[in-house]
Image 1 (cartoon, one colour):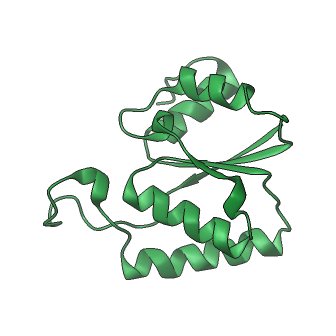
Image 2 (image 1 turned 180 degrees about the vertical axis):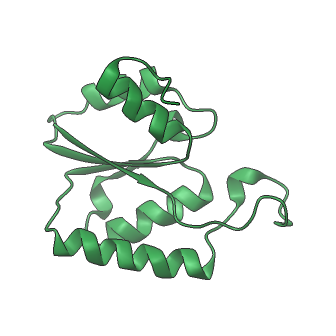
Length: 130
């Protein structure tokens, strides 16, 4: 299985955002513009994803929905608390391994530093990447 990792687009600044909950912080206009460029690159590289797993936080949800819409993957998009904050790498890996039929490729949309820690865990067996 191929795993692709995508951090959510540029979101409203945590310090200046007026919302009550961080989980509802949205993407900025610049974040949306850059995300369209990223999807252009994904299309140019002819990458295909059989499944998309995303954090349910608004900024990640917006990112995953935009990618899924542009690539016509809407039915293959799923939101998981294991990519939210706080994340659970062990449960995420269990969830991915339980997918049936087992997909050839999965796009994970989430947050830093969790995504870097997840990559480190998958590559080295150790979540400490710094």
